[in-house]
Image (tube, protein in one colour):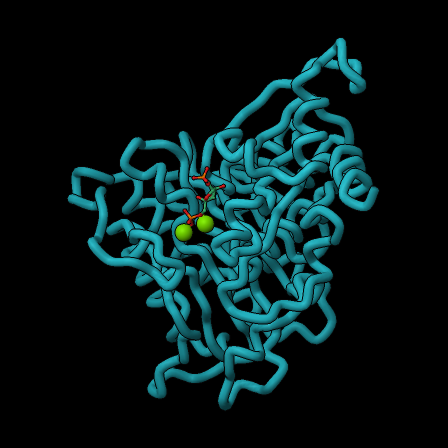
Length: 336
Ligand SMILES: O=P(O)(O)OC[C@H]1O[C@](O)(COP(=O)(O)O)[C@@H](O)[C@@H]1O
Ligand SMILES: [Mg+2]
Ligand SMILES: [Mg+2]
């Protein structure tokens, strides 16, 4: 019986055609895959291993950390620090960059990650995920600094996410389209189940946290109002709405059946000195890379996310992503 293509086979096959590939990148992705399998295992066991609930601490963004946020962060580090592919790492759950300990060899890549995205959903047993992005380290691997991480999203070498839902999936781009893999728990391997994922251009589904409606800027208000007006409104069609509060699950839905996801900035955030909710380096950029590689668009409102020059590690940005024609419309509304 043919079991299908494993993620390891898939990555190795792609790298075989990459000029100058040393195997370092392939090995790095392998370690990331292993980390996600370990996190999947912890998330699946939930209350059985006492993993639910809050850890009683806060991250640099002032958000309460869940036990599984911290555990996932540790698993990601342990799995990726030893092999010599990385110069440094950065994570939502760590204030500063993580230097590779001196006893391990250093490599040429940088890894940023959100170890557990949507963690407010953990205790209610709704889908969560892991998001990651791989960059080259421009300053060499001897003394990487925070500045090495401040690269536009367009510089990403690869990006992906793991989704811990009814099944565990890994969705990956290495800059040649987007492919999805499903974890076969019996053999412990991700198998290619969703080759060449693409986002339909048109859609009738949007996702936004409407509890913030009274704080929205005019272009966002206009867009949502027009969707809500349905067949009788200017759009001439009815729209459906979803809000999971796990960006990974929202992006996965959009990759599967189209749609748009909006987490805009608003008056309430600006009053707190924030530019958005989602983080540029380990949420917005990797998701923008995946969405664009699947034929969709990803903007802040007026600008393409992957063109932004980051100014700090935990920078937040407004995010609008999904079906291309809707993203173009939203961009036009923001530029009008
Ligand atoms: O709770 P809100 O305001 O609806 O925000 C939901 C958003 O927050 C996030 O959960 C942020 O990620 P973290 O859980 O990693 O902090 C996104 O995944 C999601 O889209
Ligand atoms: Mg997150
Ligand atoms: Mg998180």
